[in-house]
Length: 116
Image 1 (cartoon, rainbow, N blue to C red):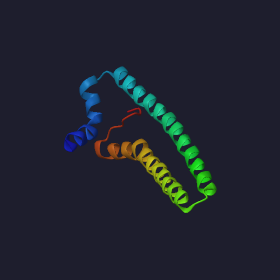
Image 2 (tube, rainbow, N blue to C red):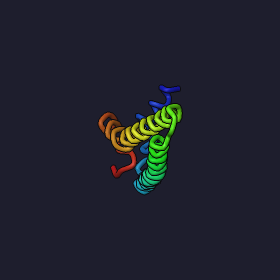
Image 3 (cartoon, rainbow, N blue to C red):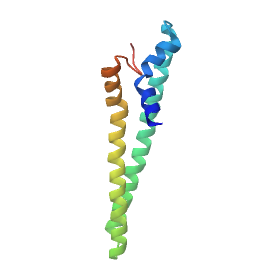
Image 4 (cartoon, one colour):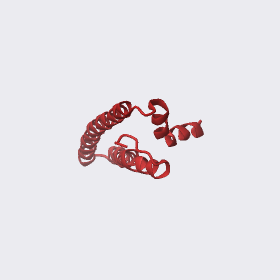
């Protein structure tokens, strides 16, 4: 199954040529859809990131206000988890929005989400 998914990803630009042929208007429409989805993803990532930062601040306040050691340890574990989640999310966003298209373009010679 992983091989099939990778095959789809690496041949994505070729699918545009197969599906649309020489129809440049259809290719432009597909690229516009990819650009719109990319914009929507940035908005969603911003909202989720803001919620994660607010939650991290809340956990920091809980850590500072904790009176016994068990509450401090629990808040500390949650805070570490939130920080790791934020870092992993940022790395994945950078990978999928910037590095993966560059890798595909280098190997395939086509662009996904941009003008050809």
